[in-house]
Length: 173
Image (cartoon, rainbow, N blue to C red):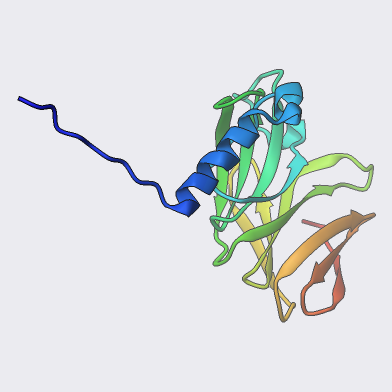
């Protein structure tokens, strides 16, 4: 009895995907720098999380970052390096579009506080308490996606695709 013959066919796009994967495996930068931390969703920005923004039960020598995520959230992520060595410690939910930017709030002495700002495609800026996850305030002033924020003194400047840079007084929060 003859063995059945099985033929496998790959489309040109499948062959290109395979070639791309092989190229990534041979990429000298990945070999030099190590494997990336994969989150499974687009990360649009990261900033360092300060000790005051991390719950007391998270004591580690690993790196803690706030990430603006494409899944409409901002996440506190513990990154130890290497593939699979990340852990989501907190998630801030409330935006109705991808979160594009995050910014830490500082007090008058230029020390970080427990507060975090998030900006989004939903045209809003949200002010959060990072320890409790509580949403304190929603600012709706831009006519398009909020793309960037920076803190200068007691003010935050937000930039939007509407072409405007707006200034916010955040003292007292």
